[in-house]
Each structure stands twice: as C-alpha cells, then as structure tokens.
Length: 315
Length: 53
Image (tube, rainbow over all chains, first blue to last red; front, side):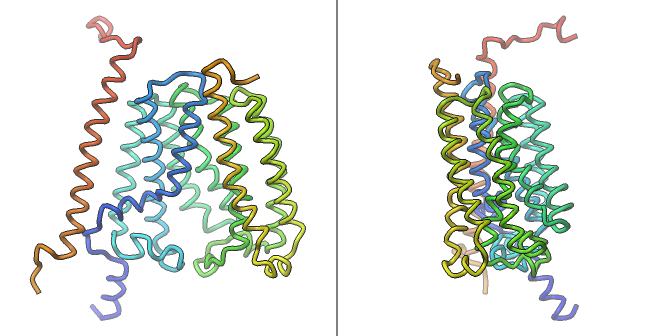
C-alpha cells in the first residue's frame, strides 16, 4: 500500500472510538427541534385526547425517526460534506465516525423508531414516519438532491411530515387539517431556504449540488421566493377557517403573511448590486422573519387547541 | 507510548459507554411507563381465551 492510498484511507476512516456526542450530532439535533415542536403541535391540535405519557413517547419516537434520517443523510452525503467548509466538521468527514457505523446507526434507529411508534400509538403514524424516512433518505438525498435545483422544494416535504405524524398518532388517520399543516411547512421551506442562499457564501458549486442561485441565477431565485410566498399566504390564512384555526390563528396569520409578503416583494424588487451594497440586509431580515413566521403559526395552532379545551377555541 | 488510564481514548470510550447505559436505562423506564399508561386506559381489557382464539 502506497503512502498516498494509506493517507486517503485514513482521511476517510475513523478511530472507532467516537464519543456519545458524535453519535448525537449525527441526528442533526438542530433540525430535530423543529420536528419535535411541529409534531407536538400536530398531536395536541388533534381532536382526540392522548394520554400525556403516550403523547410524550410519540413525539420522542418521531424525533428519533427524524434523527435517524439525518444520520442516513450524513452517511450518503459524506463525500460532499468533506468538500464543504460548513460540513467538514461533521462526525464522518472529521473522521470520528466511520460511514458504515453511521449507516448502521441510522438504519437501526429508523427501524426502532417506527416499530416503537407503532406499538405506542398506531400503524398509520408508524407508516407515515417510515415513509418520511424513506422520502428524505432515498427520494431526496439519494435521488434528487444532486440532480435538480428544485431539491429544496422536494426536501421540504420531508420536514413537513412531523405535524401530520403527530396528528395521526392521536387520531389514527390523515385529515384536511393535518394536510394543511403539512402544506404550510412545505410551501414555507423554499422561500425560507432561498433567502438564506442569497446571502450565505456557500460552496455547493464545488460540491456539485445544483442550487437554484447557481443554476437559474439570483434574479430568478428572487422571483421564486416571491411566487412561493404568494402561494403560501392563502394556504396559511385559509387554515384559520378549519378545525385547527380560530381568531387568534387568523390574527397571527394575517400579520405574519403580510410581513412575509412585504419581505418577499422587497427581495424581488432589488438587484444584486443593491443587496451587496447593504450587506444583504433585506435578505437577512426576511430569513429571520421566516423563522418567526413558522414558529408563530404553529404556536397559534397550539394556543387554539389549548383554548378549545376550555371551550374558547375555534369559531 | 503505552495507553494510560488517563488517555483521551478512554475518556471518549467512557462517554460513549455512559451515554449508552443511560439511554438503555431510559428505554426501560419508557417501556415501563408506556405499559402503565396503556393498561390504565379505561378502554383497556385483557383479551379472554375465546377472543384470543
């Protein structure tokens, strides 16, 4: 074995003695917080009461399932993660965990989370969780991420499933309300992520991942942000008149959609020269707003369901 | 250089073993709690022999 091949092996291998925190990092804990919050809201918004401990375990297993898909994503993306500065410190490219270990860890947790969610709640929730993992890992990560600039639109669907799974854990079914919660996150993801893409200096190009900013240009990305925000607004406001909505949700939806639309319009109206001149101030502001936007909508759904328990929710 | 007990490798192994131990302990508690929650449900009924068949 030559020195070159030895070094190459070492850079991709591991000590086999990763710490507990390294395995935890494989679960993408930051992404998991969104999963936990939206699944929790989906579970509580459902019209069927769930034992608090069963509800807690359901959210936990949904979070573990989400984490498992994150681990499998890191396993598949290890080659690309080695090329990008932002991801080079992840456990696999940093050499702390072997690719095979991450694969085994992700697969084991996937099976574990789906079976445990089935035992704790019902097969519909478990099947939705299994499909979410399959969708994120196989359809998005393996299939489309490196092939189409619409990758973030498709990937957004995986992140949109948790409230639907939470709802199914309580009711054992899929309904208009849970589909609306799914659609809300699904339509929100592209403008949220593209706003970030506009001001983040990333090396996606070097890694060969087709991002909209590179394939279609920044002007087109700005247009895409506006179009998706225009499509998102009626869905978000319309949900106010369904079982998960009510006066509080309507007020929150109207305010935040007006702000988000104004932000998307501002992004669309200006060009790169103007954006560079003020350090992408508008894009950064809209990105921050998008975070509050989603949190506020789901918090409003949560408040409506809590108030409903006291006879004050809905219309 | 021989590996001493203070070697960084041991710290990492200990962290992983401790973490795994705590996770397994938590899992046992979780299954126990889930069982209690399920059997304390008003709709819960132990299947009779006839139903089982």
